[in-house]
Length: 338
Ligand code: HEM
Image: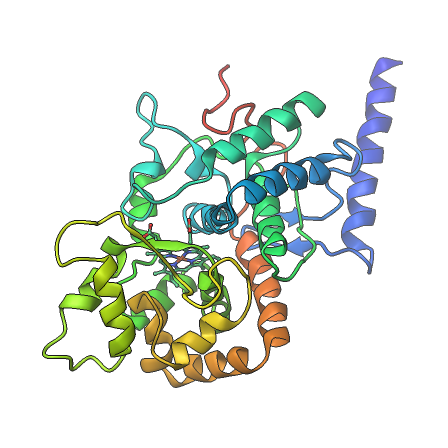
């Protein structure tokens, strides 16, 4: 009797997944990794999941506007290393070396406590159901909306990794002094293209960078020959970032509207006021990316639509799906025991 009930339940589950996956209304995505993600994933198992994520992100962003930027970046730095599997959230323990120690993340990645808060609220509501990787994807979407940016439907059903990759974090995430070609190659290795690169770089319309991420541009120029940085803007930046010291001083990535998610980032690039070298080279090194920057600077709607589309694409990088891969962590910082 119990066996046949189990069989019926299994059949029902398989049928639900099939109906959801093949319905023409489904926003399901076949991902780079092959599995399916779909927005209704928690509709039965944890109906309030999205509401819980949203309310905690909203509180955190109300307390500190920059947190929105930090949460978007966490999702990016997660997805570029072994896929969107919350590997970035694991702390070092035993032989596991945390990605938090990598060059792109050390003294820079932040927002971990907000993810902890969300996770513990979700564990109270529906234990071991909502993955940390999905929390990152939802928090990035909510952060964008709360800063004035576009919204999108987030396909769900990612599972959490049982490991991390410090070397992957060091190698896969683009550095601000990488060449245009290196950065594009790093995106292509993740299945993203030049359109995604330009649109997603637009998230530098909010948030901060430390002097150490762009100082080279202020003092490494041979007698002011670098036309890729507006000289008045450079002189202002030098007052905040001395030749030596002040490595951790923070500057706005978008000096015009640092807390508003809008297209002023692209306008800044066209007037040679991009903060990072990796920002400015979008207009100085490649005709296709220059044309895209001009398009987004001229039309905020186009930017928003492409940003939303590219975020969904990035969030689909090699997720762990299905019962056998990964796990649902109880605590985003640790692999489950036993
Ligand atoms: C294209 C290659 C990229 C490079 C080289 C790059 C590099 C950087 C650097 C160096 C910082 C400042 C870190 C610091 O000084 O502490 C930063 C901040 C940031 N990045 Fe990127 N990034 C890139 C693409 C992206 C993408 C694709 C996203 C999101 C989809 C993103 C989102 C952000 C955000 C929101 C911040 C501000 C974070 C905060 O204030 O806490 N970046 N990025």
